[in-house]
Length: 229
Image (cartoon, rainbow, N blue to C red; front, side):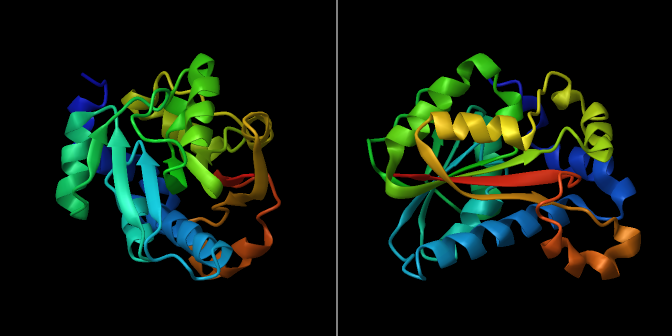
């Protein structure tokens, strides 16, 4: 049984309540990242995405995989929590759901074009990271992408949100430079590193300027994408 089984049906509501002070709802943050991911993936593969396959580790409610499915990917959801996978299956309609430990993936070598770890690694003990990255490298095809989205612990508002959520009590978010070293050590080439979410809801008319701030380590979250050579 996963520790997340008991919060599977209330997860989005709890996070939504925690981020409400920002002036945006939970779905806003998720969909902005889904758009960020799909835009990059489509550009990276030069639009040749139908028939490719993806693996979403710690899949949440399946939103990232739905975005990739919209590009023509065959999507697989995985999670330690059977309950969370049931929620994801019901909400996303994606049927290929596999209970799996990220450090011991039950998938063939070189079988996925994209692997997504969105808001997952801060819940995995650091001692297991080498195994997680090694497994992702094994499962990725040559030229495949490992897309990581994470909390930025340097942002005080991010720390406020995490401190208010019981299931984040043991979470250990790491800054982008630390993550960068782990991805490179796993043998992946960094092809994108950007900070995300700078503007509060009260100033949402200024959101278009965020695309010029992706270099700035003040963002609430960040994206890091590595490529298997």
